[in-house]
Image (cartoon, rainbow, N blue to C red; front, side):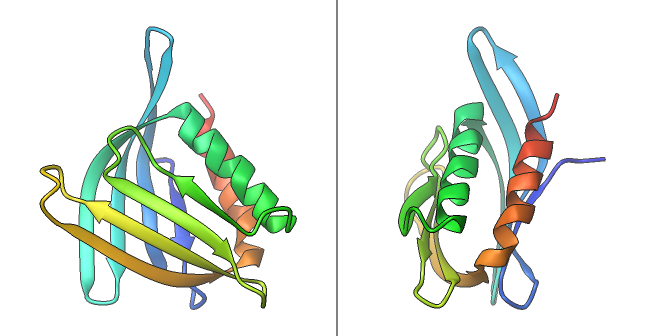
Length: 135
């Protein structure tokens, strides 16, 4: 079964999905290759990206700190090629604003958007990250 991580809005709709996550080992570097899907309002995008395992471990740590209200804001994900960036901000009402930016490979255009998700979805995201990194 393909491994995935899904960021859903308050209505339970997948907005950002990391799918077909695969671990690869290059010398000392643990790379993660995955397909990125974005489905936001009238915009849809799909691309393949590379990241380091550290990027996913860092995202997990940051999500835990947001969930425990130790942090209010952080850049949650910024993989190797810097073509996709996600920032997460804890709002006062327990909601989380996710600010995302996808840049095309030639760096000539970008899709930038925000959506709101509930902080109660964080434990599920953490479990998905852990499952995605299992060998």
